[in-house]
Image (tube, rainbow, N blue to C red; front, side, top):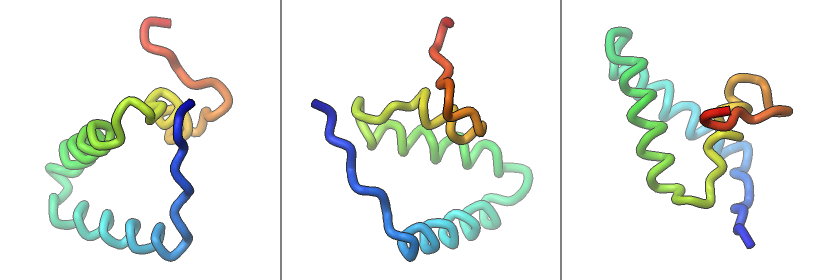
Length: 72
């Protein structure tokens, strides 16, 4: 059985948003995409195998109904 952690609270999400916005500003426009890619890779690594990465990508793309499967 996969353990799904509790969602973060709204105040926690606001703090994350502020931290992310500051980090994107610090990275600068030239490095924004690279920074975000590295951030996602670190988060995927730290979340372990329990995270459904394909579903996360689908939600971020606005297609939460049909997660894309690699090779499909």
